[in-house]
Figure (cartoon, rainbow, N blue to C red):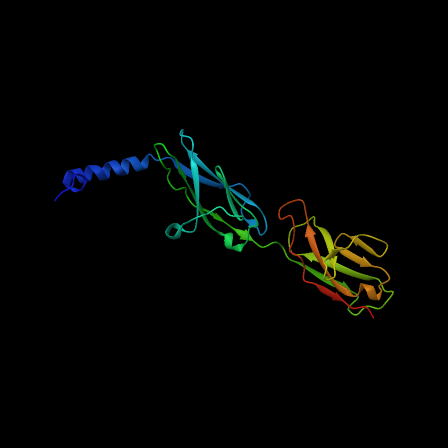
Length: 218
């Protein structure tokens, strides 16, 4: 038995029309609004633009390579607002290929898949703390803790102390000059763990917290 679209010249005409119609589906493109690469913890927006005079598009977002695309579901991590996918609190698992596609109720009912955009995710710069003079320090001494961040510039430094992560405030006892915390007249109450973190106005806006350094006062 031979069906209309499966026989000889009818089949060729059907395949020709299908191919021609497919060519005229609207095209989609994805742009990353935040500059690539992005840093862990940042919020990233990806925008889908469909080249078409038609309206009322609903946008689907996909992640993965061509052979393994997975449609993204709305969550606390991924949200879709009209043509924009927002990824909050980016982490290393978000480094991947992203695609979009439009759907609508009228004709044409869909757009082509966009070309892929690869999102690069980098760790925030690391910071390290050094202590002068060497541990242990003696009561009454002046102690300098220096915070060094591996990359970028114009850092402002925050200093923290203790298991409760108390941020130190400038006082007669504690002063901060650029990347150095100075403790004047060290006492036993200064014996604790200390660490630092950098902040800046440009991206990346912060560093990772440094490892904790234990200060021993004798």
